[in-house]
Length: 199
Image (cartoon, rainbow, N blue to C red; front, top):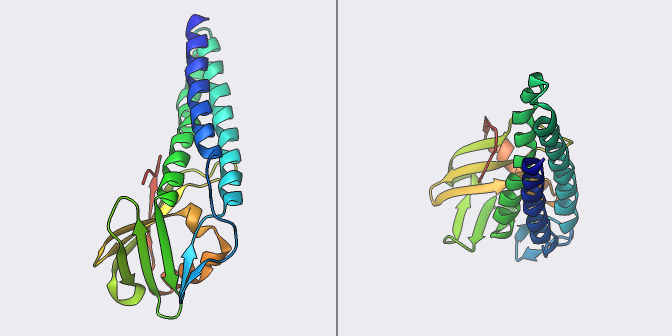
């Protein structure tokens, strides 16, 4: 019983701190933001909130499964198969945090006429490239499983100016359609599946 309380307390603590961090987000509205010919590819706050809620439901299910295993696996060994499933669902919380951070730490501008992209990053130098001439390869890296309508992933673009990683959170905004359409017009991204697609 003591182990059960420790596990429950630790999981609750992690969920509390992550939810506080996510609730403090100052995301963008859904309106288009322009700088000359360039349009900002941003993630609306409503989308982050929606994905966060679904992820918290997944984490809650994972916690319940973990508690079932802790309480009953001593007597019913077959329940141990639930352990990796529960860890996977709880792990989505860390993937969500990683992707929201990646979304907030960079601004991506796209000129649909010239098909030119500018990536302004808090941690790296600004990268500027054209889709048609400067991109060497495009990969889609995503989670192995769609859970509760949520699939985490990102586009990884190898350009002459450097590596650019664009989370699905950015790509799910309708205003980003011209960019997504241009990428798939010029490239056939190779798809890689990962258990936890950390950027």
